[in-house]
Length: 161
Length: 287
Image (cartoon, rainbow over all chains, first blue to last red; front, side):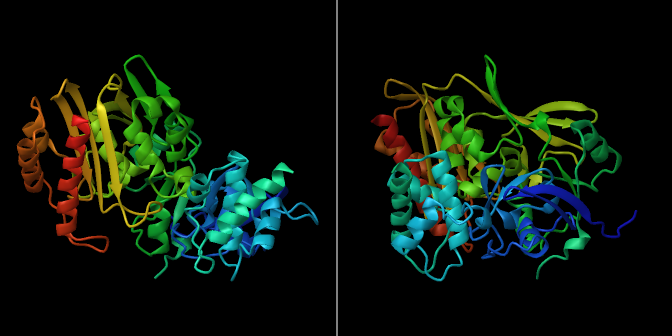
């Protein structure tokens, strides 16, 4: 049986733009985004689905892009941190993170923003425990989380106004 | 060390029939690949020995939650998020709902599947204790047809399944009619989210006034497989849980489980917690 590696061509939409990504089928979506699509906003933390740094939205669902093989991305609609701001206008979540000191070193921030944006799209008025649950898969070693939770609460306020 | 990615194949069959044909014609060569929450972690760690996978993620026959008069059936690809969102599961099978909500994080729950949780056969898996308490049955499918087996006994030993290499887990069937049973679920981990269990306990009992008419008890992370604690059940069945009876049941549980020391906990801690959770379950029945 032919064991020579075969690349696959995968068509998908990233941040509203059509892409064809060519790589090995088990290539992590995280690597395809960073190295093939040139979208380096998505960060690698643990590489094993524990830390959430590589969180993106795929067909509207929050996922860890380190755990998605490229062969499963065919036809998918993907949103990364590069697609969260609207042209020159930052999203409410991004504005709130800036205003409330929700980011320090910044490595967890793209994933944290995606998790927060995804939470608010499902639940525009989350309680504190719902915010904690929605962000529980995203680890931050700088902030102690208090300012991150405050940022999400503030983002809800901005969205209401 | 990381795996060498070009070594791995992941092919997408166009239909369930094609997937089953592939499994039948090249037995043992292909393994199913669903949400990837376990397999991609092994890949990253360089510990994925199998090299050829069939991408079953998009097979519609293996999706969806269906309620009939007698059963609620979950397609093997039902994710934890879909389980959590389902009103019938929440109402009639609350332990499964709880287990799904306490597994991983939002991102894991969006990809992890009930069939994957069963096929991965981790003794620390969180949904199997609920499935054992509910007397779940598995529907297995191959090119030669389907067969239905009890989930109790499906795991024959550590990572040993009663599953031929040409078969897929198609659906999980849960018999209905236990809404009136008292139900108890407790996962003990290092933190509330994104933690693998040190001990996981699921119990349900049908009460006749203060007497336990019937019951099921199941525990994770205390044996090579998720265990149905039948000897402990037999001590309690038909009786009123007095302190002396609960003590006897705790002793029986201690003989029935076989916890070990590992990176997450110790055998001693697990034994103590398992016995304490049993007492808590029994106390909840008296309340």
